[in-house]
Amino acid sequence: MRGGLVAGALALLVAAPAAAQDSLPPAPYADRQLVDPQAEARARELMESLRCLTCQSQSIADSDAAMAGDMRHQVRTRIAAGESPEAIRAWLVARYGDYVSYRPQLSTLTWPLFAVPLGLLAAALLILRRRLRPRDPR
Image 1: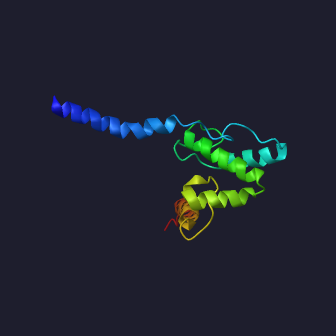
Image 2: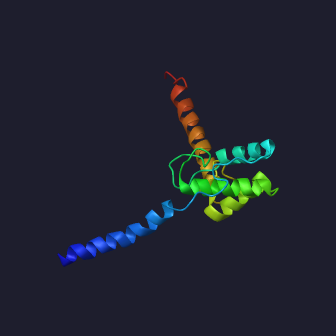
Image 3: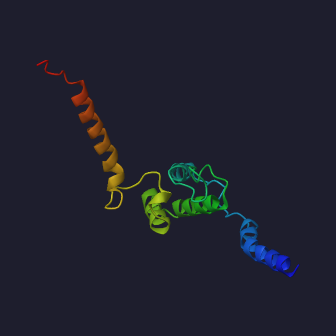
């Protein structure tokens, strides 16, 4: 009996922060568009190129997650303040890592992601060329 009470209390302690997170109100610009249509278009384009950190393969523009709402708010607030989309992208990448961007930048850490597919394609073409070459009938 006592072990069940301890386990139940531990479960409540673990679940409480997660429940509290969802009860927070959404950020003001999470779902409200900017007044300036050109600024909203820039914000929308940027949001579609940023990955939601809590969802699988969704942009922050498409996600209903609280984290995506906070990121949409940050993007719109910074666009309204006059920041460029690339400066905002750089800030988000510095804060959350390269994973946040659907457009990874070429760097010392990411060059294998670009080079390996090209190397595999070159190897496949070389193998195909050797297989399809006519053989000498001697």
